[in-house]
Length: 253
Image (tube, rainbow, N blue to C red; front, side):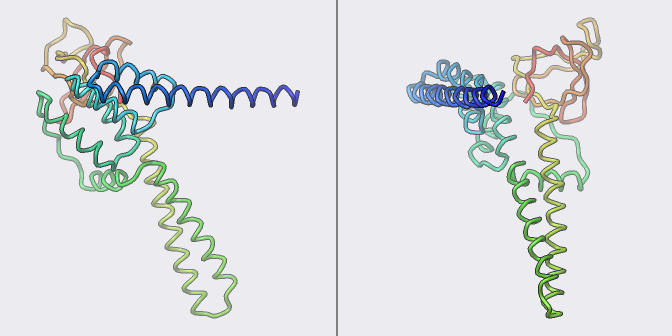
């Protein structure tokens, strides 16, 4: 049994390495195609890399660039948004996303949100989920060291300093953990999607016999609020308007 387990682990590691090597080769070929202005070919190769599971902010950023150059704005925004979820503070990603959004037909004003909600979102977006997790571990580790010094030192002043600094570091680790958790949930449980069809009619009910409410165009970001069937989803746009569209007209971020 032990030998079989060892062979399974060895085979898994070997297979993982093969996938990584294959993805690396495809990524290079895609970059070469992009450099030659062969954007459709580059897209196909980049998406083969994505299919291997070897995804990254850089990969989605490159896919977004290829779609942008291919004049497919909806797909470009979709992939820039996916890149931003992984690396929210990357200047190139945010710049290109802003550039692509300027090319969308619909200019939707966002509904006002509570100050506290804006404040929390702004802080969470300062770093990625991974960076917040590392920050949590660092703060907590320092708090443990300071707690040790509190018990180790005999001098009253040093004990007080160790205690209060340790308490501050512990509280900071708690806040960092909350932000890391919020960042994780924003990625893992996001219902945001991008309209990828050139235009789509939004209905008041999940069928084409329903009341026509408004029309959205390629590149608009929406939130999926409900799924009636596999064919229809209820969406909410930035200004708060709600309606139903066919699920094949959008793609989740």
